[in-house]
Image 1 (cartoon, rainbow, N blue to C red):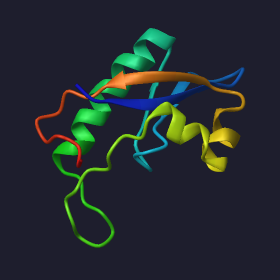
Image 2 (image 1 turned 60 degrees about the vertical axis):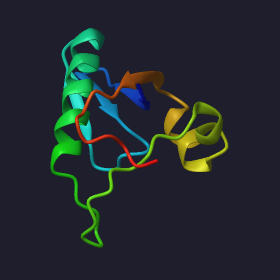
Image 3 (image 1 turned 90 degrees about the vertical axis):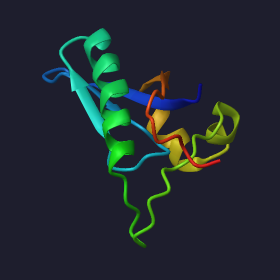
Image 4 (image 1 turned 120 degrees about the horizontal axis):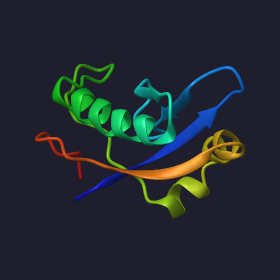
Length: 97
């Protein structure tokens, strides 16, 4: 089962926010880190069901490994003050290989 790497952020006056470096625009939130992670798995599955790229294709982005992400300067910047977690991907529409 594939996993997507997620970045979890928390500001002082907000809930926990989750984003996916490999799936731009897909975010989740929760009042606790457990709730945020549960919502993250749900929103990832939901996004895959009706995913459409800017060019009109339906191919859902493939997850990169943590090693690939660590080599990405944007990931390094976004992960600097975040908790990094792996979110399981249970969607029927599997990620592109």
